[in-house]
Length: 250
Image: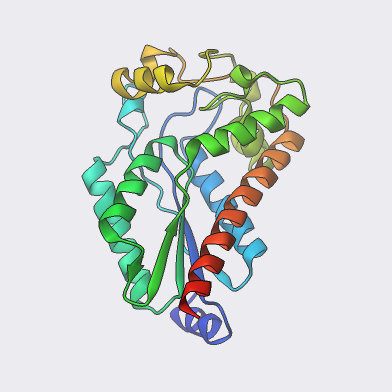
């Protein structure tokens, strides 16, 4: 878009802007480094369409990924750098006069730093309200429910480059997926102990191929259902947040 097109959209009733914070990092031997960014952009577009009066800003393609740095190709920001970048991003958008800025994360390592950002910035910048979905467990639970419909175990559904991410990328960009290289990775449950091992010891402490889950049975059709579930959860969250704050201001 040009700046005039953005202005025309706002003059025409676009009052909200959404963007994702993704990552550029390893996703096993079968998925592209851009997996999280692809998923973040697709989710932003789908949520914007669901909400209406919402425009999509570019996805931030770099996140907090130190736990993947033992795999070549991964690029990682320090948490403080990430928070500063996202703060500058939302302040730029707020300066243009949007009513609501909606932020989603498509990378697990960004959820906690994103929550820290909201604590630091607060719920508003001037007249613009800031909303961020930061409940990673809610999303993983929803993905497991979709997987269960097809008799895919929670362990295979996985939390990184497993069934859910592979299926989603098959739905979005099948040309970027090498299913011949897909293989099982870590097949334990993603609980608090697993998360601690992952973030403290790095992904290789759990999986030599970088996969947490099993992508072998991934399907594009299931990826569409994962995306639908993701879109519904995030859309409902933002709709409730916007309605709640608008009600308080009447």
